[in-house]
Image 1: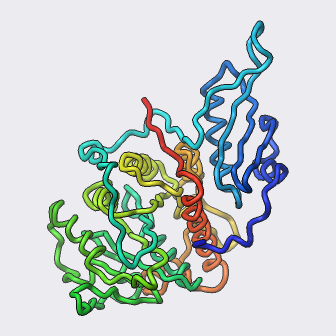
Image 2 (image 1 turned 180 degrees about the vertical axis):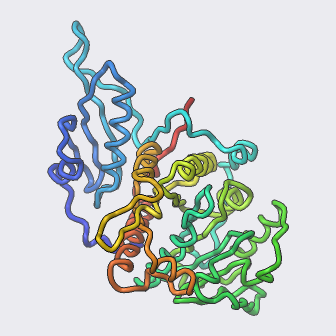
Image 3 (image 1 turned 120 degrees about the horizontal axis):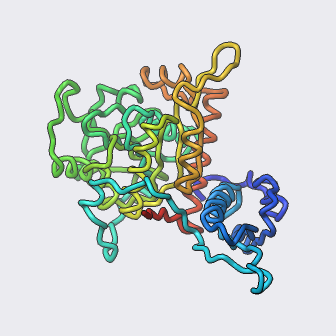
Length: 389
């Protein structure tokens, strides 16, 4: 397993009910093969929209419980007078729905779906690939990428970090190696720069930091695929446990290249609570749905600021990430507050995740949630986000 699951408690009916808040609508719980859970949900037959919303929320919450490998649900309701005593409302197991308003991006629509009959070749030296994305700029995506990588390195895992933000690479600065330049091996492959125990590559290592990157789509695609395929990531005998790819904002060439040409295992979406960021989250989720890349969940950044008296101030809004996660049928994996140490760690090239204390614990807990979600992909299908008018 990618992450030690010894902390997980055995699943039971009571465990599931307690985690869901012991709601009146939960009339039964079935658990088979250790982690496959079926929820029996009592609802009203005359309000299918409310029933569907309840089902989505219940499955999303149950899927975050430690030890759950698959969640299904059965909706039951009192039948109308003159029919059988109970009726079962049809559901689609392992499905998440998004209501009108979450539309596919123009970029994703124009590209179309990748050819599902062909398999994307794996990359030697890399076991798994996780894309960290946000269709909105300035939400802390690179901060999340760097500190996730640092958390895994801190746990002793072999981790790599690829900066795919061609136009604004920030990873070299955030890791404290802005002047580094990668060497090449005997096969003319780039040797990733080592920083804090993390193997890294970035266009920032290869270009003048003051030179503008005026590159069109094909060149962007070539740069990303070369940094992946023409680099000596790990070794066949000792591969990276995980490669994290920090993507640029938007749903353009970089993201589509990764989704369609790279064996990405899953994606992670980063957002702030404010509405202008959440609108872009819907577009980002739509792109991954269109290109069949599983989305593990959402990480909310800049969730609040806490003053010296301990009062929390929600400068960017409150609850936006939670509501968006429910709408998309995805788990909210973490809420990261505004902390000066996190900002300073990025500016000074010392990731905050390496700190002892609350900040380090925060990123360790976040990394664990992401890792367990990655592990779960091996035992259950990822939720399918369905976009409907």
